[in-house]
Each structure stands twice: as structure tokens, then as C-alpha cells.
Image (cartoon, rainbow, N blue to C red; front, side, top):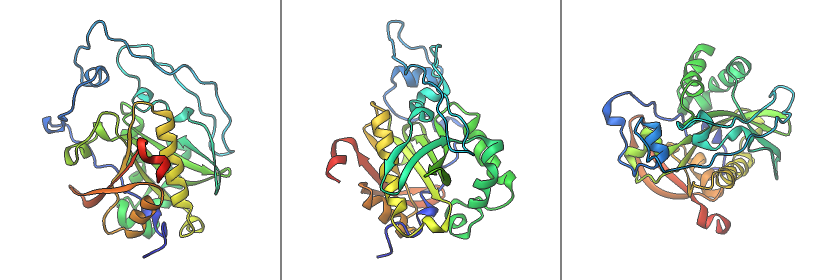
Length: 268
């Protein structure tokens, strides 16, 4: 078997692009949050708690400050759908101190585009080309409702990976597996060859899935859907405590549905 994360840089690939037709309506129980998101009227007596404001924290030199935002309207604010990833803070891992820093287009598009043009990454993400190709991939997330948050992964002060944290239950992916409310998905790529093939991908997959479960109390599962052809990536997820759940046929690939359950994470 290939090393656990020899090509985790190819990651799980980008999230399938949602279209705007009626077929995007997901057959899920509609919580107050989903009713608000889809423009339905929530029960007048329902209430929902929101995270408090978080104070600004300093990031590595080229990462910039990250601040939290408190929602005050009945419709979910962008950060509400994923419980404010900007506020999750750094964690100590065997590879060093790691933090997810939400992407800022003007600051980060050049480095992300460079990573997307690495042949090992491009084979699965299919976003090689000029910076405008990367920008076109990022803008819908940055300008959307917050169901997908693109982030830089900063390890020991150095941006070295790209992540997308997304609501799998609100994504077209949910049409291809038995989604549960608040399922949270991850996509990733490791940007530098020096961080590939030595266990860093596995370490960070475990750290990021722990961040999701620690900061999203309503989320019971973290899911991912790497391309079945990307054996090193699938192996890295397994080594990070995910289990293989099923093969799923997606519009752009045949994928391995990987799941990390809150109830079993301490045993894996």
C-alpha cells in the first residue's frame, strides 16, 4: 500500500458545484435553520442560540487577523451555518501548531493557484490554469451563504494547505448518500511537496475533523468523498480515524464516502 498520505495533496477534490434548479432541494427534515435558509417561515415560538462575539486574534504574518461575527437576524448569517470556523483557534499537533484561516481572495489567490497547478493536485481538483480559474472557484464560496468556507491551513506559521469546510447536508452531495442534519464535509490539498508522504496529511485530517466536532456541537459526523482512484488519500483518511462507508457515484467521479463519527472518534 502507498504511504498513508503520499498524495493527500490531491485531497478529496472540490465540492460538486450546485446548480439552481429545483432538483437541488434536499429531502431532509427541515429544522428551523433549514427553513430560514430556504426562505420558509420558522415557527414563531422557536428560538436558536448563537455563538457570542469572539475577539480578534493574531495570525501568522501573511494570514492576517481573524474576527468573529455575531448574527442578530432571524435568517442565518454566513458564519452561522458552520459555527464560525474563523474562531476555532490554533491546535497543537505532532506536526506543529496548526490553524484554519479563512481565505481572503486578494491575499491568498496567488498561493492557492500555484498549488492548483501542481500536477499531483490538478489531476484530482481539475483547477489548473491562471489565477482567474482559482478565483472563479473561490468567489461563489466567499460570496455565498456560508455553507462552504475555504481556508488556508497554516502549520507552524506557514500556509501549507487548502481546505474547504462545508455543510454536506446542504450540498448536492446529500443526494448521493443518506445525509443527516449538520453533517460536515471536508476537502483538502497539501500544497508543498515537503509536507507530502510523511504523515502530515493524516495528522491534519485528524486535527481538522476534531476541530469540527469540538466546535460544531450539532454535528455528529464529518464526511469526505475522495476519488476512489486516489488510494493514498483514502488511506490517509483511514489512518486519521475515518471509516469507509460506501462507494458513491458523483457527477464528476466515483468516490469513497469516508465518515468519522463523533461517538467513535476516541476509539479510532
